[in-house]
Length: 340
Image (cartoon, rainbow, N blue to C red; front, side, top):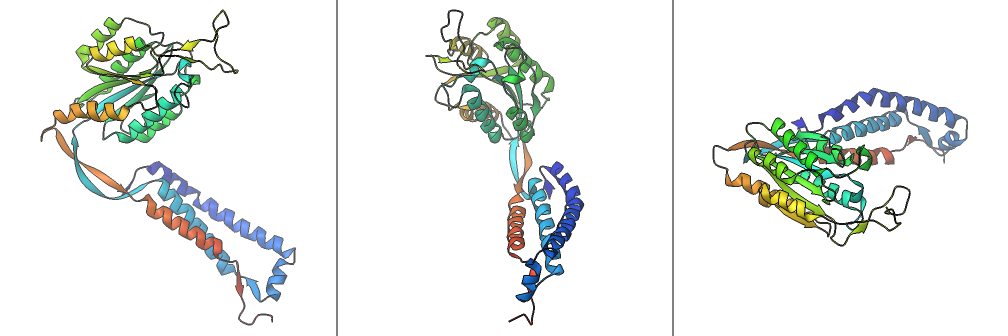
């Protein structure tokens, strides 16, 4: 047995405080009832407050709290052995956070759709490591390479336009930073180094030839996903309305595919245009990244890994059951010789 989110077990330290709170709550309720006729009426009807029932109900509450904490810690019992590639792939996602990514030609907007698709990609990973680099006019490593997918999702959800101190779209620097991060963090057992670039491709800076010359000796492939439509869409402003040029006309942001296609094809990757909301990251991962690994797999490159079975459902079910028992258990008991 082990816990996937063992850090949540720290909430068990709150049990004594919950018990103290329940004790003072019961004491206060009894004191308040003594000021009104409720308790006396119950006695006349043949009922009396039962200290034992109050104690049992408090125990139910404590057990419910404990079981919920255990469920959040995600206990795992039992496992299966599964053969997986030794090392797997290292994937660095480079995500555009420029203002043009707020255009809504893809619902709800380009940025939110991209983040959802990256989240789905994280859910598909099979032992591979993933990292995230956001960029606009500058770039930085938001999440270094990790196999802790919960942590990667947490970093991803925190990304927004406010994360970028300088606006723009410097693809050159962002991809180069991703390559340097892969080169620094990837171990000897890493079977593939991949960059997934998600952007509308506008206003790129830097030399394409120089970037390709930097990537190819390092055997790093770039898979680009062009986000947006060729017809263009307005860019929302923070205070309302849309961005306008000096002449007062609304600025349209259009997908620029040329740079992205050349970068991907030159490094052995591929390019996909996304306009309908489906980024096809599952296709890139399963048909390209994992395919490259499977073609190189043999008995020496495979290792058996434990795949644990999640059992948090048991604890959650027991917590719900005890909560219902506590809810339907009365604080009063019927006297054997009640008032008729």
